[in-house]
Image 1: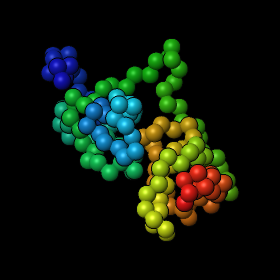
Image 2: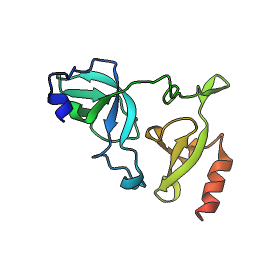
Image 3: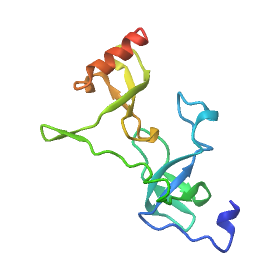
Image 4: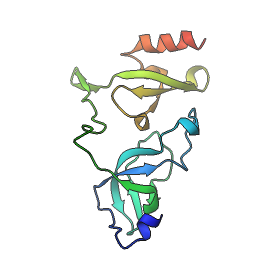
Length: 152
């Protein structure tokens, strides 16, 4: 917080990329000790005041998207470590975008109401998404492997 109260603090601008401190974020199926200290980078969608910002968050996160500047850190891409979080373009199948599933992380619900938490290949864990069983048309083998492994 001291870094934002000093005279050197420059407010963020619309469209800036920032890291979000993950100290107060609670995700299911994640151990706090093993969780990343920061999530992102996220884009600033709206500047509400010099200290409050609305971020563009993943739809799977069901949290309020407005954060204080003390929870945000500017995102800086360095050349020495290479580009950060370069996301691969989706495959085009019959003119539709298709993303590759890296793994099924978890599941929730029973029977027809069951949903699966998907980790997308080449994307950070902040982009994980809940999908229904009907959405696995192009990747039935991944779903079947998960079901046999977890006795579903």
